[in-house]
Length: 79
Image (cartoon, rainbow, N blue to C red; front, side, top):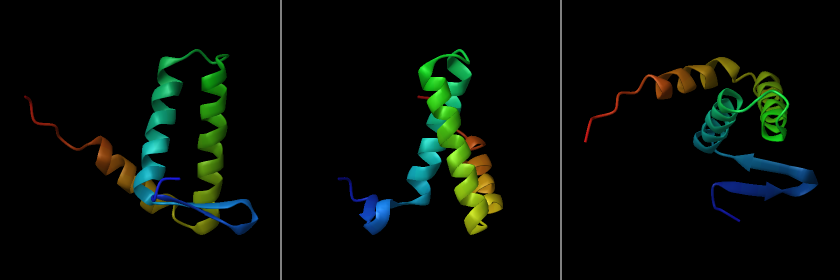
């Protein structure tokens, strides 16, 4: 298993903020690119709902949304 994801006892998994942000961005892309009845779209909705629930439980929703917005607004240099 990758070093960024650590499995702990009781079905709990630890994941870094960076990788959690990557998962959220992937799910948002899937929602944008697929139909609402597509299985990947349904799965992405469930994952995003679970991430929102987790962030609300630990009280880090605002901080995470700021990081997401900062990452989306980051400029890219042309090649």
